[in-house]
Image 1 (cartoon, rainbow, N blue to C red):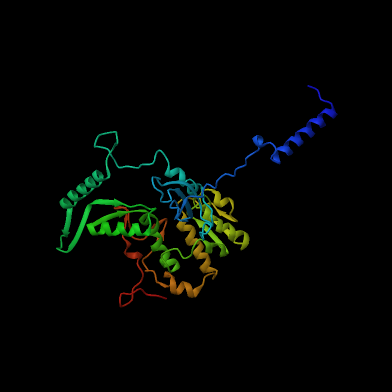
Image 2 (image 1 turned 45 degrees about the vertical axis):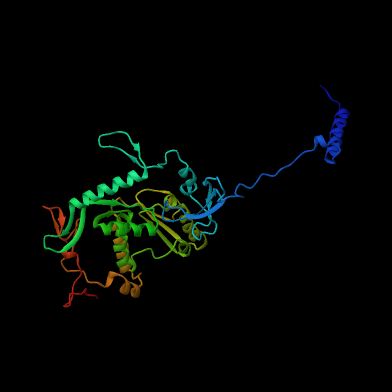
Length: 352
């Protein structure tokens, strides 16, 4: 169909006139009905919580249906970052943002299952059956192996044949209950992330920095002048917490130093990168300490009062060719007697 210029303008004018008449209500059967989409969180129940997938502990807001209405099953259908959380400020990394998928995953274990000895199949059982079976097995083993007194006749009340592996992502309250439960039964084999990760930090941080725990919060990192990242990859493992390092770098002109055998994402934004050999962490740190001491770059008052620098090391302590003093090549073990500090007449540690 071919249209002339005049015919084209006539059709356009007719269309505009018809639209105007319809909008004025002269054609009720042709009237358009516009409707706004309802806000998806309008009738939701909001629950404030923390993400447990790393030590940053970002704040999350979980929205669920239910609202205490009758015949409505509560179900989480939306998760987002909490803008009021002081550390994350509304941000979530892929782990936190994927919480909703974890909750509704088809692979999530929702019921107790049991695999009999020699079987290759798991069978579902009720919670009552699972609790009864666990309690019975623990009771039988404790009755058979409980140690009330040791060889010297001292009351010890130990149960050494059963151990408990606790969660690393539980709350402080759950951790306290784990400790009370296991200690009350006499268990001595209790393991969790705290022993592997935080146990060594306490014994190292206390004599080095004067406190056996983290000495600052995540937000305080923005005030740093120098940020040393060693033994971790915060840019990938803790991306939401790492933004405070970036803020220190941008707004405080901080120097970021990464010490790691691998060139990781933290090293990609660092000002200095030290690719040390795997296993040489102690040598690197001791070298840094020696440099600071020789060039008088330490705070003498703080080091003297709050670290072990003022303690006198025993004369027979030594380190040579990668081995500390007291090593027995036959037993391949250390006699740590020489690792102690010098003691005075009162058997107290001598200080300079």
